[in-house]
Amino acid sequence: MPRVARQIADSGFYHVTCRGNGRQLLFEDDEDRRHYIALLENKARSHEVAVLAWCLMDNHVHLLLDDPKNEVSHMMHGLTTAYAQYFNSKTGHVGAVFQGRFTGVPITDDRQLLQAVRYIHENPAKANIAAVDRYRWSSYQEYLTGGGIVSSELILDMVGGPKGFRELFQDERYAYYYVRASRRVADDEALPAARCALEGGQPSDIKALCRGDRDEALRRLRETGLTVKQIERLTGIGKSSITRATAVRNDMTRSQ
Image (cartoon, rainbow, N blue to C red; front, side, top):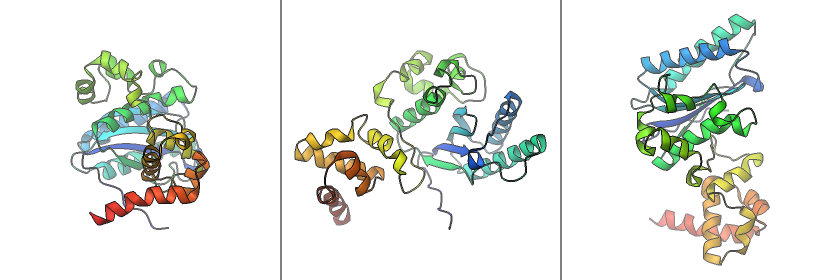
C-alpha cells in the first residue's frame, strides 16, 4: 500500500507517536530509557526541533515537538534508526524494532496544544501504571522543577507557570483529546473519538436533543472521521437522519 504523505502543521507543532513492532517492548530497563532520552535530546538539537513534552511507555513513545523548519521527518528517522541499532545490538533482537514510521498529528490551535500536553503526561495513569506526578519517564517533573530536555517556556507562559501547569490536569476544557493518525477511525476507538468531538458528552445522549443541536452534534462526529455506520451504532440514530444532517455541511462547504 502506498505511503500517505505526512500532513504539514501550519503551527509547526506535532504530536508524534512511535510504537514497537508488533507491540513489542521498546524499553527493557532504565538503561534503555536513558539511552533513548539522550538520543532524543541529541537529534532534536541537531535538527533545531524543540521537545515540548515526552512520555516513554513500555512499547510506545509520545512526543510533542515544535518544528519550525520542517525537520521532524529527518529528526525522527535519525532517532528511530539510532535507537533500533542500539536495541538490536544490546538484546540480540533481529528485525524491525519500530512499527513502521512514526505518526505525526499536526496541532492546529492553542487548545489542542494544551490538550496534547495533558494527554501525553496522563498516559501512565490511564494505563494504571502510576499517577501523573509519580511517573519517572515523562517530562511532567521537568515542568515543575526545571532541567531535563523539555523546552517548557511556551507552555508555562500559556498556563501561568508551574502552578497553572498542575491545574491544567484538573481543567475539564483540556480533558478530551483524540489522536487520529489515519483517515479511518478504528471501531475500538470510535467511542473515545466521539467523546472528544462532543467535549466529553455521550453520543447516546444526542438522540434526545432538539433537531438543530442534534444535527450539529452529528456533523461534529462526521468531521472527526467517524463513519455513518459508527455514528449509527453509538447514537442509535438512523442512517438516513445522519446522512441528511451531515450532507448539509458538505453541501455548504462545496458551495463556498
